[in-house]
Image (cartoon, rainbow, N blue to C red; front, side, top):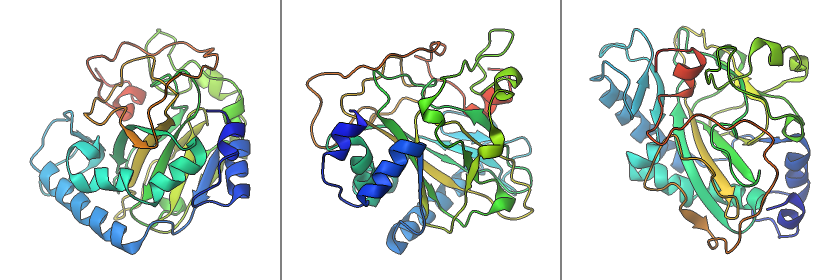
Length: 296
């Protein structure tokens, strides 16, 4: 759905100027956006997930763990598809203020794509290198976004997400290395052409949300705080008329589910001037493993 069509619908939760700013810059930050009740529920279930991960010694399709992860001292990188593992996560994705937010920026017909919970653990939680999302899961158009929720305060010390304003209107980069292997980020040559000095880092207290367009360049530094982690719950949505053109790399029973409005009767198309990702019909590991070029 085009920005002009979306903006023609009355907003539910955002001011019109905030919607216009999102379409101009490719990102949005709303501080203290999510209620205390939701934060308490999500915090409780996330604590249970961390406890469950203590018994895991190798990354699997649920938990992605860092080197050094132990039962006594867990070091999680990601909980994959949280909506598959507890109904609280699915309820939040479909019946909360973030669903209203998605509707304001995608139009009245909204489709769920996937979820993930990135932890960026204390004491060296890995960086996320600069990348764009749409190359991981191309769609017929670019009315696709990701909404992140800070489950703890985020400041400069623990690796806030950085975005490059306006980059969603520019180049879609090849995210392969010189050996023709997918790495899920810009290589050094492409990164040298990007004005990273213009990056904006999205800091905020617990309950703040970030929104970034599927073409917006973004990344985050390692978390070297000795005790504090940076749990970031991410939910990706699209307009109903944006259809995936490659398999979802993280399958879920909820992939493609309509969460607002109705299913599209017609697909809308934008040119996709970029190389397609590898065939992930069998799933994949994680962005961390890909960017670190770990064995797949």
